[in-house]
Amino acid sequence: MTRLITSGFSHFILFIGIFIMIVPVWMIFASSTHSGLTINTQGLQMFLGDSFYENYLRVLLYKGGFFKEITALKMFLNSFIMATGVAILSVITSLMAAYALVYFRTKYATLLFWMIFVTILVPLELRIFPTYSVMAELNLVNSYFGLIVPISASAIATLFFRQFYKTVPDELLESAKLDGANTWRFFIDFLLPLSKTMIVAMLIFMFVFGYNQYLWPLLVTSSEQYWTVVMGLKMMSGSIVHRFAFVMMSMVPPILIIIVLQKHFIKGVFQDK
Amino acid sequence: MSFLDLKNVTKIYPNGTKAVHETSLSINEGEFMVFVGPSGCGKSTLLRMVAGLEDITEGDINLDGQLMNEVDPSERDVAMVFQNYALYPHMNVYNNLAYGLKNRGIDKETIEQKVNDAAKLLQISDFLQRKPSMLSGGQRQRVAMGRAIVRNPKIFLFDEPLSNLDAKLRIQMRLEIKKLQQKVGVTSIFVTHDQVEAMTLADRLAVINDGIIEQLGTPIEIYNNPKSLFVAGFIGSPQMNFLDANLNNKTLSAENFEIKNIDSDYNGEVTLGIRPEHLIESENGLINLNVELVEQLGSDNLVYGQIKNIKDFCYRSPGNQTIKKGDTLSLNIEENKYYIFDKSTGKRVN
Ligand SMILES: Nc1ncnc2c1ncn2[C@@H]1O[C@H](COP(=O)(O)OP(=O)(O)OP(=O)(O)O)[C@@H](O)[C@H]1O
Ligand SMILES: [Mg+2]
Image (cartoon, rainbow over all chains, first blue to last red):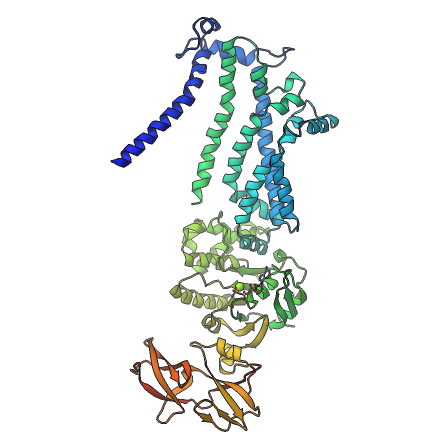
């Protein structure tokens, strides 16, 4: 009986939490389906209107920006390219960095690791100007490469993979060696499959990280062709309903990626049990 | 030159631990060699140097006529069974067995054939699709064996592969390993600190102490003729009894008995060793044992007691005798079944 009460109570709290988070989102969504006139005269709406297609289509295809050469569709493409690039590149680099740190016989592996680790204390915002000048000198401003590469070295992901590799028993490596596996094969045939779930988790994490970038893309792109969704949120001009529609759409990719990859994530976790 | 040749092999770990001292050893093709010794004596280190998992500090290792010192483990064509099996957790049993073959670029049909043959031999055919986590300890052990067998390597190396199994399964697997090795005839080195395992498996036995091979020989040779106090104490179960004694002019005098006409010219303090199974009850025996504890094993009894000031002296009596606590037994030593060691060096002197 008491259990029922406590579980009822905790559910109650959870519902309040969900309510607080969902309602504003819902209000923006509901409002984005009305005409601009309705919002301006009657304020935010709680119920759906009838301008959904009209508003959303206009936002997707409308050429915005100062030079009128970027559409929301293109921004989504840019963000997708950037976030995917960051996710894949940072997972690859941190997997390999962790591999070298754990398995190569360097005396200074621990020192090297800590040097990588302290970069967490130096966020992009702090090193943004030197980073920018490097990119500028390499002529990589206004390119996907310039958007992606400078933020694709993740100390956190390296830390995660390193800690995981350290739990892999030495006998596994030795056994694989005796079975004729070289360094590279051990990485491909053992560490990659064994860290599958962690890789998926890191991909999600880094995708969202890349997608959420604002300051760096703002700095490294002067051409509107490279605007991302998060930049667009700020730059978008036009009626309030169109902005609401854009905000709603900007939430879709991260949610989608979590829903899609979550499946693999959970499968990976429970498969080997 | 024999099949596997160790010449003055020494191992010093980077932290300065000298784990193996100038060890030389030859193993013949098809032979089952067992390294036995107490924990930390360097058995695993020696084995791992043969496998190539540890660098050799000094000396040479030759396998099948080829110097191995600088050869990578993946090129040595040796197979090893680890104490914790080290099965590949993300691969099913089939792939665990097949992995080594795949790495050599053997074609699919041949791999399938070989894996199925090995699986049949080890009776694991029914589990080929399972992951190692879904197997019992004994089954995992078989898979680990299978992984070694399927590659048909030059040499099998076993590092205490049975120590994670319960007593009954150990005995069963011990038997199977021996049968299997006789069937496939691959040269093997088996490391253990269990002397019963060592005795039962070995064609030849190397008793290792503190990084040195103390004695090398067939199990029976070593049991009958231990060359040092250490070997005498290590081989045989229950352990040999040791008594302090003095040897003078071929007469050995222990605390309360004497043995005359001993075949040794050594004079001085010695340790007398007598195996529990080399004592017989007789009237007016040399030794009077005050019984303190009797362990009844069914087939025989282990009788522990005191002789004057010596405690925990053990005598193995036939199982049909009833001996109780408090009895006094009069015991004789079987003809010439005693061992005399120099007390200071531990070397055998008779
Ligand atoms: N990587 C290492 N670095 C330094 N010393 C080591 C290392 N591995 C083992 N040793 C030392 O070398 C000696 C021999 O170790 P080894 O593992 O060969 O013993 P063992 O006979 O296999 O013992 P056990 O029966 O407990 O497995 C020990 O004193 C051990 O502490
Ligand atoms: Mg060992």
